[in-house]
Figure 1 (cartoon, rainbow, N blue to C red):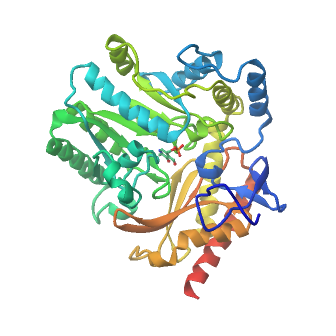
Figure 2 (cartoon, helix red, strand yellow):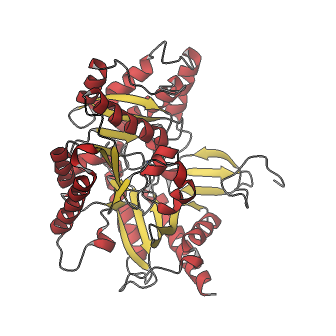
Length: 446
Ligand code: PLP
């Protein structure tokens, strides 16, 4: 294409034209095939062109594409909510459907605020989140995200949010400190932050159970989230788990928090919820929050035109059906273990691979100049971008992230392949990725 009228993300380069998908593969107009090692951005959990999802969408299009939610509900929205609640941690009772992850985060923040207004605590307005997190790109979600660089030019437009330390053991757990002590230190920091802001003035703490887009599948140390839950409870603060990236089976359980043994007050989900077949997200809410709004003003004062879109709900319901029918959560755990093993075998001793981490089919690799000191590559080398280019040249999609976030530089690769990936495709993913990493590092020495 010599000219484009699409305003692409990169204004310097037009990407290849995707024309067809099948399983874990996307094909472009030049006839090249790409192994989708990242599910786009942890979206395509069932791969591409799944016949059961297509059939469910066709059936819904034949019946009814759209009915505005101020007039109607639909069977597919009701069934999807039933399913998501049935499989959610105990206490979660309702789903509020939106069109994506940022919308879900916005809705969760407003639901938290409305809850406190309804129960007569309007002084609760502060939000606390973590540095090196990503919660979306709309103004509210951007303000919550812990990425000073992303926020910088929009700062005058953003609400004030207090940011605390992430749980990032590879970099921040001190020598001689146990995982328990590290988790306790972070819980104390949160406690002190609530105190500093004025305990009765904080409404919500927002965190990703497994951090995705900023630092590559960073899991919390054992017990961290239980301690965080306790601190929130002590201060009457709502805990919002942002599972937009790590939820919906990606880590081997439908909700990532199941593995932390806690129940958040609100959970945001998107991406894998629709598997990329339709844009859809949701806020999963606890009964007491819904009760407060019901007994108070009687409605949630928030809405978008495409809430609970019928085709999106039909696609998402079909995704949930396939995950259950084909026992895909067990498959995520199994293929995730296989992926980890392959990565460790191919890259575990690599002089520039500092950490291989993650859970299920949500894995991250952190690249370092020096394994012993954990020194990062010079940011000017843009290693992560080079890896992405080299991977694409080898017919592989991965989600490399890098740059300086909150004063800390890092080059990471995030992997989130479809749950249906085969052993042979895992071999290809690993081999192509190892080649891309080596080629990118070689370039930096030129
Ligand atoms: N929250 C998290 C944890 C995310 O990873 C993302 C997107 O990557 C979002 C929110 C925003 O979702 P969306 O891009 O669908 O608006």
